[in-house]
Length: 392
Image (tube, rainbow, N blue to C red; front, side):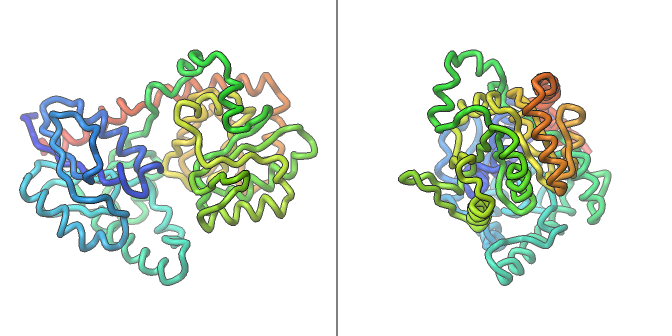
Protein backbone atom coordinates (compact mmCIF):
# COMPACT_ATOMS: atom_id res chain seq x y z
CA UNK A 1 0.00 0.00 0.00
CA UNK A 2 1.41 3.38 -1.04
CA UNK A 3 1.75 6.01 1.69
CA UNK A 4 -1.68 7.30 2.59
CA UNK A 5 -3.30 9.85 4.85
CA UNK A 6 -5.57 8.70 7.70
CA UNK A 7 -7.51 11.07 9.96
CA UNK A 8 -8.87 9.94 13.34
CA UNK A 9 -11.41 11.50 15.70
CA UNK A 10 -9.83 11.53 19.19
CA UNK A 11 -12.41 13.71 20.97
CA UNK A 12 -13.23 10.80 23.30
CA UNK A 13 -9.79 11.35 24.85
CA UNK A 14 -11.30 14.42 26.55
CA UNK A 15 -15.10 14.17 26.71
CA UNK A 16 -17.42 12.24 29.05
CA UNK A 17 -16.28 8.95 27.49
CA UNK A 18 -12.65 9.49 28.50
CA UNK A 19 -12.74 7.16 31.51
CA UNK A 20 -15.20 4.68 30.03
CA UNK A 21 -14.75 1.82 27.58
CA UNK A 22 -15.06 4.10 24.52
CA UNK A 23 -12.28 6.42 25.68
CA UNK A 24 -10.17 3.49 26.84
CA UNK A 25 -10.51 1.87 23.42
CA UNK A 26 -9.72 5.07 21.51
CA UNK A 27 -6.67 6.10 23.52
CA UNK A 28 -5.07 2.65 23.63
CA UNK A 29 -5.80 1.80 20.00
CA UNK A 30 -4.64 5.15 18.61
CA UNK A 31 -1.40 5.02 20.62
CA UNK A 32 -0.62 1.74 18.84
CA UNK A 33 -1.90 2.74 15.39
CA UNK A 34 0.29 5.85 15.11
CA UNK A 35 3.37 3.62 15.42
CA UNK A 36 2.53 2.15 12.03
CA UNK A 37 4.81 3.37 9.25
CA UNK A 38 3.81 4.29 5.72
CA UNK A 39 0.92 6.46 6.93
CA UNK A 40 0.52 10.18 7.43
CA UNK A 41 -1.52 10.27 10.64
CA UNK A 42 -3.78 13.20 11.51
CA UNK A 43 -5.71 13.39 14.78
CA UNK A 44 -8.72 15.64 15.34
CA UNK A 45 -9.25 16.49 19.01
CA UNK A 46 -9.39 19.17 21.64
CA UNK A 47 -6.72 21.66 22.52
CA UNK A 48 -5.87 19.88 25.75
CA UNK A 49 -4.15 17.01 23.93
CA UNK A 50 -0.41 17.40 24.61
CA UNK A 51 1.09 13.90 24.72
CA UNK A 52 1.09 12.98 21.04
CA UNK A 53 4.16 11.98 18.97
CA UNK A 54 5.74 14.94 17.15
CA UNK A 55 5.43 13.28 13.76
CA UNK A 56 1.65 12.95 14.14
CA UNK A 57 -0.47 15.85 12.91
CA UNK A 58 -2.81 17.23 15.56
CA UNK A 59 -5.72 19.49 14.63
CA UNK A 60 -7.43 21.30 17.48
CA UNK A 61 -11.21 21.60 17.47
CA UNK A 62 -11.10 24.14 20.29
CA UNK A 63 -11.96 23.73 23.98
CA UNK A 64 -13.22 20.32 25.07
CA UNK A 65 -16.96 19.79 24.62
CA UNK A 66 -19.26 17.05 25.82
CA UNK A 67 -20.73 14.76 23.18
CA UNK A 68 -24.41 15.75 22.85
CA UNK A 69 -27.10 15.94 20.13
CA UNK A 70 -25.51 19.32 19.28
CA UNK A 71 -22.88 17.20 17.49
CA UNK A 72 -25.26 17.21 14.52
CA UNK A 73 -24.49 20.91 14.02
CA UNK A 74 -20.92 20.98 15.31
CA UNK A 75 -19.67 18.28 12.97
CA UNK A 76 -20.26 20.46 9.95
CA UNK A 77 -18.93 23.53 11.73
CA UNK A 78 -15.87 22.10 13.50
CA UNK A 79 -14.90 18.82 11.85
CA UNK A 80 -15.73 19.18 8.17
CA UNK A 81 -13.48 22.22 7.44
CA UNK A 82 -10.51 20.28 8.84
CA UNK A 83 -11.45 17.10 6.97
CA UNK A 84 -11.88 18.97 3.68
CA UNK A 85 -8.54 20.70 4.17
CA UNK A 86 -6.74 17.43 4.93
CA UNK A 87 -8.53 15.43 2.22
CA UNK A 88 -7.62 12.12 3.91
CA UNK A 89 -7.77 8.75 2.19
CA UNK A 90 -9.61 7.40 5.23
CA UNK A 91 -11.43 8.87 8.23
CA UNK A 92 -11.74 6.70 11.35
CA UNK A 93 -14.25 7.32 14.15
CA UNK A 94 -13.69 5.20 17.31
CA UNK A 95 -17.28 6.10 18.24
CA UNK A 96 -20.09 7.26 15.95
CA UNK A 97 -21.54 10.11 18.04
CA UNK A 98 -19.37 12.98 16.80
CA UNK A 99 -20.33 12.40 13.17
CA UNK A 100 -19.09 10.70 10.02
CA UNK A 101 -18.02 12.36 6.73
CA UNK A 102 -19.85 9.78 4.61
CA UNK A 103 -19.58 10.73 0.94
CA UNK A 104 -16.53 12.96 1.43
CA UNK A 105 -13.93 10.21 1.92
CA UNK A 106 -13.71 6.56 2.88
CA UNK A 107 -14.99 6.06 6.41
CA UNK A 108 -14.33 3.47 9.12
CA UNK A 109 -16.32 3.43 12.37
CA UNK A 110 -16.17 1.34 15.54
CA UNK A 111 -19.53 0.02 16.78
CA UNK A 112 -19.09 -0.96 20.43
CA UNK A 113 -22.65 -2.22 20.91
CA UNK A 114 -26.23 -1.20 20.15
CA UNK A 115 -27.71 -1.67 23.61
CA UNK A 116 -29.51 1.73 23.65
CA UNK A 117 -31.26 0.97 20.36
CA UNK A 118 -32.35 -2.50 21.43
CA UNK A 119 -33.53 -1.42 24.88
CA UNK A 120 -34.97 1.96 23.89
CA UNK A 121 -33.08 3.48 26.84
CA UNK A 122 -31.06 6.38 25.49
CA UNK A 123 -31.08 8.60 28.59
CA UNK A 124 -31.99 8.32 32.27
CA UNK A 125 -32.86 12.03 32.49
CA UNK A 126 -36.56 11.82 31.76
CA UNK A 127 -38.88 10.93 28.89
CA UNK A 128 -38.22 14.07 26.82
CA UNK A 129 -34.45 13.71 27.04
CA UNK A 130 -34.77 10.03 26.18
CA UNK A 131 -36.81 10.91 23.08
CA UNK A 132 -34.29 13.51 21.91
CA UNK A 133 -31.30 11.25 22.52
CA UNK A 134 -33.15 8.44 20.73
CA UNK A 135 -33.51 10.55 17.57
CA UNK A 136 -29.83 11.44 17.78
CA UNK A 137 -28.75 7.82 18.30
CA UNK A 138 -30.88 6.41 15.50
CA UNK A 139 -29.61 9.06 13.07
CA UNK A 140 -26.01 8.13 13.88
CA UNK A 141 -26.81 4.43 13.61
CA UNK A 142 -28.24 5.00 10.13
CA UNK A 143 -25.16 6.98 9.07
CA UNK A 144 -22.87 4.26 10.39
CA UNK A 145 -24.43 1.70 8.04
CA UNK A 146 -23.09 3.80 5.15
CA UNK A 147 -19.47 3.59 6.32
CA UNK A 148 -17.00 1.64 4.17
CA UNK A 149 -15.73 -0.36 7.16
CA UNK A 150 -17.55 -1.25 10.37
CA UNK A 151 -15.32 -2.47 13.17
CA UNK A 152 -16.80 -4.21 16.17
CA UNK A 153 -15.45 -5.88 19.28
CA UNK A 154 -17.05 -9.34 19.33
CA UNK A 155 -18.89 -11.89 17.23
CA UNK A 156 -21.87 -11.21 19.51
CA UNK A 157 -22.01 -7.53 18.54
CA UNK A 158 -21.47 -8.48 14.91
CA UNK A 159 -24.59 -10.65 15.08
CA UNK A 160 -26.52 -7.77 16.69
CA UNK A 161 -25.47 -5.40 13.90
CA UNK A 162 -26.59 -7.85 11.25
CA UNK A 163 -30.04 -7.98 12.85
CA UNK A 164 -30.51 -4.23 12.38
CA UNK A 165 -29.39 -4.04 8.76
CA UNK A 166 -25.60 -3.63 8.71
CA UNK A 167 -23.88 -5.19 5.68
CA UNK A 168 -22.10 -8.41 6.57
CA UNK A 169 -19.27 -7.84 4.10
CA UNK A 170 -18.37 -4.51 5.76
CA UNK A 171 -17.99 -5.83 9.32
CA UNK A 172 -14.63 -6.78 10.83
CA UNK A 173 -14.28 -8.08 14.40
CA UNK A 174 -11.29 -6.73 16.32
CA UNK A 175 -11.15 -7.83 19.95
CA UNK A 176 -10.09 -5.27 22.53
CA UNK A 177 -7.07 -5.61 24.79
CA UNK A 178 -5.12 -4.54 27.83
CA UNK A 179 -1.85 -2.62 28.14
CA UNK A 180 1.14 -4.89 28.61
CA UNK A 181 1.81 -3.53 32.09
CA UNK A 182 -1.55 -4.79 33.43
CA UNK A 183 -0.21 -8.16 34.52
CA UNK A 184 1.20 -10.02 37.47
CA UNK A 185 4.61 -8.61 36.49
CA UNK A 186 3.35 -5.38 38.11
CA UNK A 187 2.35 -7.27 41.24
CA UNK A 188 5.81 -8.76 41.62
CA UNK A 189 7.30 -5.28 42.07
CA UNK A 190 5.03 -4.52 45.05
CA UNK A 191 6.50 -6.16 48.15
CA UNK A 192 3.69 -5.22 50.55
CA UNK A 193 0.28 -5.46 48.89
CA UNK A 194 -1.43 -4.77 52.22
CA UNK A 195 -0.34 -1.12 51.96
CA UNK A 196 -2.26 -0.80 48.71
CA UNK A 197 -5.38 -2.27 50.28
CA UNK A 198 -4.98 -0.03 53.33
CA UNK A 199 -4.86 3.02 51.06
CA UNK A 200 -8.49 2.30 50.13
CA UNK A 201 -9.47 0.93 53.57
CA UNK A 202 -10.03 -2.54 52.10
CA UNK A 203 -9.77 -5.53 54.40
CA UNK A 204 -9.57 -9.16 53.32
CA UNK A 205 -11.37 -11.31 52.43
CA UNK A 206 -13.47 -9.49 49.85
CA UNK A 207 -15.16 -9.88 46.50
CA UNK A 208 -14.87 -7.11 43.95
CA UNK A 209 -16.98 -5.21 41.43
CA UNK A 210 -16.27 -2.27 39.14
CA UNK A 211 -17.45 -1.48 35.64
CA UNK A 212 -20.43 0.89 35.87
CA UNK A 213 -23.92 1.10 37.35
CA UNK A 214 -26.03 1.53 34.20
CA UNK A 215 -29.21 -0.61 34.12
CA UNK A 216 -27.64 -3.32 31.96
CA UNK A 217 -24.90 -3.88 34.57
CA UNK A 218 -27.39 -5.70 36.84
CA UNK A 219 -25.78 -4.44 40.05
CA UNK A 220 -29.09 -4.78 41.91
CA UNK A 221 -28.81 -8.55 41.45
CA UNK A 222 -25.23 -8.47 42.71
CA UNK A 223 -26.33 -6.74 45.93
CA UNK A 224 -29.20 -9.20 46.39
CA UNK A 225 -26.89 -12.18 45.88
CA UNK A 226 -24.39 -10.70 48.34
CA UNK A 227 -27.19 -10.25 50.88
CA UNK A 228 -27.90 -13.99 50.58
CA UNK A 229 -24.34 -14.99 51.48
CA UNK A 230 -23.48 -12.32 54.03
CA UNK A 231 -24.48 -14.48 57.00
CA UNK A 232 -22.82 -17.60 55.58
CA UNK A 233 -19.39 -16.18 54.76
CA UNK A 234 -17.12 -13.64 56.41
CA UNK A 235 -16.48 -11.56 53.32
CA UNK A 236 -16.89 -7.92 52.23
CA UNK A 237 -17.97 -6.51 48.88
CA UNK A 238 -15.75 -3.78 47.40
CA UNK A 239 -17.28 -1.61 44.66
CA UNK A 240 -15.88 1.33 42.74
CA UNK A 241 -17.30 3.94 40.39
CA UNK A 242 -16.31 7.52 39.55
CA UNK A 243 -19.89 8.60 40.27
CA UNK A 244 -19.42 7.90 43.97
CA UNK A 245 -17.60 10.51 46.01
CA UNK A 246 -15.96 9.84 49.37
CA UNK A 247 -16.32 13.06 51.38
CA UNK A 248 -15.87 13.46 55.13
CA UNK A 249 -16.37 9.72 55.62
CA UNK A 250 -19.69 9.94 53.77
CA UNK A 251 -20.54 8.40 50.40
CA UNK A 252 -22.17 10.80 47.96
CA UNK A 253 -23.82 9.44 44.82
CA UNK A 254 -23.71 11.74 41.80
CA UNK A 255 -26.01 9.98 39.33
CA UNK A 256 -29.45 8.41 39.32
CA UNK A 257 -27.92 4.94 39.04
CA UNK A 258 -25.46 5.32 41.93
CA UNK A 259 -28.17 6.89 44.12
CA UNK A 260 -30.31 3.82 43.47
CA UNK A 261 -27.34 1.62 44.36
CA UNK A 262 -27.00 3.35 47.74
CA UNK A 263 -30.71 2.91 48.40
CA UNK A 264 -30.50 -0.81 47.63
CA UNK A 265 -27.44 -1.21 49.86
CA UNK A 266 -29.30 0.52 52.69
CA UNK A 267 -32.55 -1.41 52.16
CA UNK A 268 -30.64 -4.71 52.30
CA UNK A 269 -28.71 -3.54 55.37
CA UNK A 270 -25.39 -4.15 53.63
CA UNK A 271 -23.58 -0.98 54.72
CA UNK A 272 -21.32 -2.69 57.31
CA UNK A 273 -20.09 -5.16 54.69
CA UNK A 274 -19.58 -2.92 51.66
CA UNK A 275 -16.60 -0.70 50.83
CA UNK A 276 -17.40 1.98 48.25
CA UNK A 277 -14.67 3.93 46.45
CA UNK A 278 -14.81 6.47 43.65
CA UNK A 279 -11.72 5.15 41.89
CA UNK A 280 -8.63 2.99 42.09
CA UNK A 281 -5.35 4.36 40.80
CA UNK A 282 -4.37 2.41 37.69
CA UNK A 283 -1.12 0.97 39.17
CA UNK A 284 -3.12 -0.28 42.18
CA UNK A 285 -5.90 -1.98 40.23
CA UNK A 286 -4.03 -5.25 39.43
CA UNK A 287 -3.20 -5.63 43.12
CA UNK A 288 -6.78 -5.00 44.24
CA UNK A 289 -7.97 -7.55 41.68
CA UNK A 290 -5.35 -10.15 42.58
CA UNK A 291 -6.10 -9.95 46.31
CA UNK A 292 -9.86 -10.41 45.85
CA UNK A 293 -11.57 -13.76 46.39
CA UNK A 294 -13.56 -13.19 43.21
CA UNK A 295 -14.60 -10.55 40.69
CA UNK A 296 -18.36 -10.64 40.07
CA UNK A 297 -19.86 -9.03 36.96
CA UNK A 298 -23.50 -9.82 36.12
CA UNK A 299 -24.05 -7.52 33.15
CA UNK A 300 -26.92 -8.54 30.92
CA UNK A 301 -25.53 -6.85 27.81
CA UNK A 302 -21.92 -6.08 26.86
CA UNK A 303 -20.27 -5.58 23.50
CA UNK A 304 -17.01 -6.88 24.96
CA UNK A 305 -16.38 -6.15 28.66
CA UNK A 306 -12.99 -4.68 29.53
CA UNK A 307 -13.61 -4.95 33.28
CA UNK A 308 -13.67 -8.75 33.22
CA UNK A 309 -10.51 -8.80 31.12
CA UNK A 310 -8.72 -6.63 33.68
CA UNK A 311 -9.76 -8.97 36.48
CA UNK A 312 -8.74 -12.11 34.60
CA UNK A 313 -5.38 -10.63 33.64
CA UNK A 314 -4.56 -9.99 37.30
CA UNK A 315 -5.47 -13.56 38.20
CA UNK A 316 -8.72 -12.74 39.97
CA UNK A 317 -11.24 -15.63 39.87
CA UNK A 318 -14.15 -14.53 37.70
CA UNK A 319 -17.88 -15.02 38.21
CA UNK A 320 -19.69 -13.52 35.24
CA UNK A 321 -22.94 -13.41 33.34
CA UNK A 322 -23.64 -16.07 30.74
CA UNK A 323 -25.19 -13.43 28.45
CA UNK A 324 -24.15 -11.42 25.37
CA UNK A 325 -20.40 -11.39 24.62
CA UNK A 326 -19.20 -12.85 27.92
CA UNK A 327 -19.25 -16.57 26.96
CA UNK A 328 -17.27 -15.64 23.84
CA UNK A 329 -14.67 -13.58 25.71
CA UNK A 330 -14.39 -15.74 28.83
CA UNK A 331 -14.75 -19.25 27.35
CA UNK A 332 -13.92 -21.68 30.19
CA UNK A 333 -11.82 -19.17 32.17
CA UNK A 334 -14.65 -18.10 34.46
CA UNK A 335 -17.68 -19.29 36.39
CA UNK A 336 -20.64 -18.24 34.19
CA UNK A 337 -24.07 -17.81 35.79
CA UNK A 338 -27.58 -16.70 34.88
CA UNK A 339 -27.40 -13.03 35.97
CA UNK A 340 -31.12 -12.94 36.80
CA UNK A 341 -30.95 -15.96 39.10
CA UNK A 342 -29.96 -14.61 42.50
CA UNK A 343 -29.70 -18.01 44.15
CA UNK A 344 -27.45 -19.36 41.39
CA UNK A 345 -25.18 -16.33 41.69
CA UNK A 346 -25.06 -16.56 45.49
CA UNK A 347 -24.18 -20.26 45.33
CA UNK A 348 -21.43 -19.54 42.80
CA UNK A 349 -19.92 -16.87 45.05
CA UNK A 350 -19.98 -19.23 48.04
CA UNK A 351 -18.43 -22.05 46.05
CA UNK A 352 -15.58 -19.88 44.79
CA UNK A 353 -14.73 -18.23 48.12
CA UNK A 354 -14.87 -21.54 50.02
CA UNK A 355 -12.91 -23.63 47.51
CA UNK A 356 -9.26 -22.65 47.27
CA UNK A 357 -8.59 -25.23 44.56
CA UNK A 358 -11.37 -23.76 42.40
CA UNK A 359 -10.07 -20.23 42.93
CA UNK A 360 -6.60 -21.30 41.88
CA UNK A 361 -8.00 -23.03 38.78
CA UNK A 362 -10.04 -19.96 37.76
CA UNK A 363 -7.12 -17.64 38.47
CA UNK A 364 -4.74 -19.56 36.21
CA UNK A 365 -7.37 -20.02 33.48
CA UNK A 366 -8.21 -16.32 33.53
CA UNK A 367 -4.59 -15.30 33.16
CA UNK A 368 -4.08 -17.70 30.25
CA UNK A 369 -7.21 -16.51 28.50
CA UNK A 370 -6.43 -12.82 28.99
CA UNK A 371 -3.08 -13.15 27.23
CA UNK A 372 -4.75 -13.59 23.83
CA UNK A 373 -6.10 -10.02 24.04
CA UNK A 374 -3.77 -7.04 23.53
CA UNK A 375 -4.01 -3.52 22.15
CA UNK A 376 -1.14 -4.27 19.79
CA UNK A 377 -3.07 -7.19 18.30
CA UNK A 378 -6.20 -5.02 18.10
CA UNK A 379 -4.21 -2.31 16.30
CA UNK A 380 -2.61 -4.82 13.91
CA UNK A 381 -6.03 -6.21 12.94
CA UNK A 382 -7.50 -2.71 12.63
CA UNK A 383 -4.65 -1.56 10.41
CA UNK A 384 -5.02 -4.59 8.15
CA UNK A 385 -8.72 -3.78 7.81
CA UNK A 386 -7.83 -0.18 6.90
CA UNK A 387 -5.40 -1.36 4.23
CA UNK A 388 -8.00 -3.70 2.76
CA UNK A 389 -10.52 -0.92 2.11
CA UNK A 390 -7.85 1.54 0.96
CA UNK A 391 -6.68 -0.86 -1.74
CA UNK A 392 -10.21 -1.67 -3.00
